Length: 277
Image (cartoon, rainbow, N blue to C red):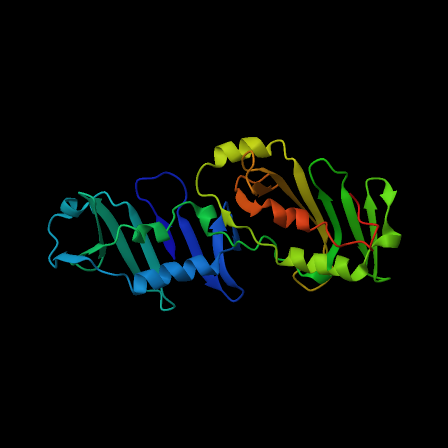
C-alpha cells in the first residue's frame, strides 16, 4: 500500500504486509504499522459511497482536479498487480478515478482523510515490541518526583526497587511489578501527530517526565543479544491538558498519551503504607 500527495515534498507512505503483520517504511527502516488504520482505509476503498458519476469517458482531468491530484493511493496484490486511485478536488467537490479507467466518481469529501500522507500517522499505536518476560529494568521519572527504578533479577526471580537513593526492595509487590512489565508490553499511544510537531518537539527538548527501559534481546540465530535500552520523553501537551506529548528520545515523531496512563504506572507497586509519595 502506497499513499502520497504528488505535490508535496517528503517521502510517501509505504506499507507492506509481512508474516508478523503490517510494516511501515520510516526513515530507512521498517517499523510496525497500525493495522486498524490500514484496515479502515482498505475497507473505505472497497465500499466507498458514491455521490455521483459525472463521466465514463474522461477527456479533461483538470475539470475534476485530477490533473493536480490531492492524493494517490496504490495497492499491490500478491500477484504483483497494482491498482492506483487518484483523488482530485474541484469546486468544493471531491472526485476519484482508477488510473486504468476513464470513469470518474464523485465521492464524500471525508474519504481522502482516511489516508494521511504523513508517514508517522501510520505507525502502530502499540509503542513497544518486546515481551514482558524480557524486561530487566524500569525507570520512571515523573515531574516533581525522584526517579522510581525497578530491576528484575531473572536468575533469582527477584524484583528490586528504589526511589532515588532509598531502597524499597523490601516493600515491592513482585506480582504488581510483573504486571507493570505486562502493562508496558501493551502500552498504547492515543495517536501519532501528523502535524504541529514543531511546537511539540520544542517542548520535548526539556521533558518533564521520562520512562526508561532495559530489555533483553535475541540475535537472529536465537542466541542472547545485547541489552536494548529505550527512553521515552514526555511533556504536557498544553497547560491543563490531560495529555502528554511523547517521543522516543532522539526521534522526530511525536505521539499523544494520557497523563493518567503514565502516572498510573507507578501506583500499586508497594505494600500498604509503603507507597512512595
